[in-house]
Structures are given as C-alpha cells and as structure tokens.
Image (cartoon, helix red, strand yellow):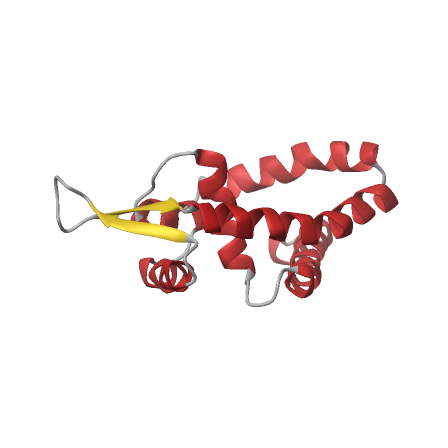
Length: 147
C-alpha cells in the first residue's frame, strides 16, 4: 500500500487533530475571562517546575517561536501573573517566575476546567484513558525526536 494513503495513519492523525480542536474550544470557554490556553499552559508549567525559566526555555518547551512566547509572557506580566527579571550574569538574558497572583490565576483556571476534564474522563472511562496514555506519549516522543 502507498504510504501516503495509509488509512490507519490518516485516521489516527485526523482524530488527533479533531480532538485537539474540540478540546481547545471547550477549555477556552471554561477558562476564566481573559485567560487563554497559552497563558494557562505557561502558568501551569511554571507552577509545577517551582523554578525560573528563560523565555527561550519556555519557547522550546511549548514548541513555539521566541516571539510567540514573548507575546504570551508580556500579557502574563501585564496581568501580574509572572515576574520577569534580567539575568544578573548576562544582561541579554531574562528569567521568568510565576507570581503569587499567577498561582491564584492558575488555581482558578484549574478549578474552572476540572469539571470538564473529569466529566470527559468519567464518560470515556478511566481504564480507556490509562490505555490511551502510553500510545499518546509514544507518539509525542516520536514526533519530538524529529524536531
């Protein structure tokens, strides 16, 4: 069979793209007013890491351009959700840390989206989710290896 018309691969990626679109749309509606998925993602990452990150590190983590990350960080800083400071050893670099207000905003966002996430997992079934996770992680790791 021609690789470009492999129905299994096409179906897999079609489902992933549709799930991504639908999940983003539902989560965007559930997030607190003014918060975007990119804002929540950065705040959640910083809250989990418990340490500063450079904008370049964050851009690599989220596979976005430095410009896109700068835009997100500027909005988060304006809202008081992150602190951005210069690197004391290299003034060309900066470091980003989540602020106490950012922790509160992240927690509020988690509280807002938790019912949606739990509902979806409950409807699909925890065992099905557990079975899907290794496949999704393997796919993610495979795609990361090509970057």
